[in-house]
Length: 119
Length: 106
Image (tube, rainbow over all chains, first blue to last red; front, side):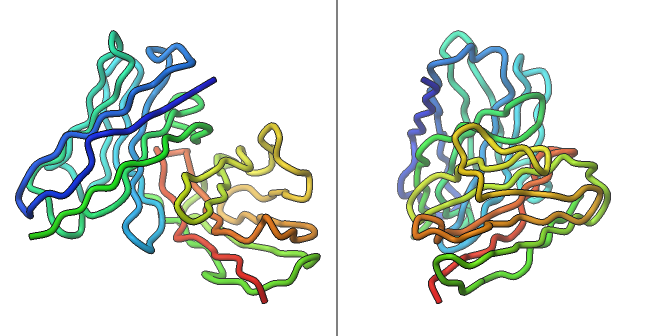
C-alpha cells in the first residue's frame, strides 16, 4: 500500500524557515517524480514544486522561486521542502504527492501538514 | 504559464441531479487533464485522468470529456457522498489546478 506521511509543519514567524519532510513507503520511491502542493485556508490547490526521480531536475511555481527548495533522498525514501523567508501568505496545508509518471497527475497524496506563518 | 479556469465556482444541486463542471485551459493541453474530489480536511482524491479515464474504483456516475482547451466533468446522478469540491489539473506542463468548484446541497 502506498503511503505518504508529511511532517515538519508548525508555527513560524514571518521571515523564518521551516523544512517539511515526506516519508514514502509501499512503492519504489526512486522510480517516481514527487510533488508538493499547498492549500491556503479556505482556498484552492496550488502546485508548489516537483522533483524528478533522480533529483536531477526541479521545478517551481514562479512566485516561490528562490525561497523554496525541493530535494529528495532516495536512500531514505523521502522528499523535502525547505522553506525560507516565510511570509504570512505561505500559511497553508502542504501536501506531498506522487506523480503517476513523469510530471503527470497525482494518484497518491499524503494527509498534509499545516504551516502557519504568524507573529 | 498555463492557466486553468473552472466554472461555476459554486453549484447548488439536489441528490439525483445531473451536475456539469467546465474547465478551460489558456492554451491547448491535449487530453492531459485530471479531475479530483476534495472533502473538508482531507487530501484530494483522483477521479479522472487523461480527460476521460476513470481511476480504478471510482463510480461510473463520474465522467469526463474534452480535449485541447475545453473540458467537461459530469456527475450523472448526484449522490449524498458527492457533495465536495472538485478541481481540474493540467499536466502537460507540470501541474496547474483550476480554482475549484464547490458542489453544495440545494
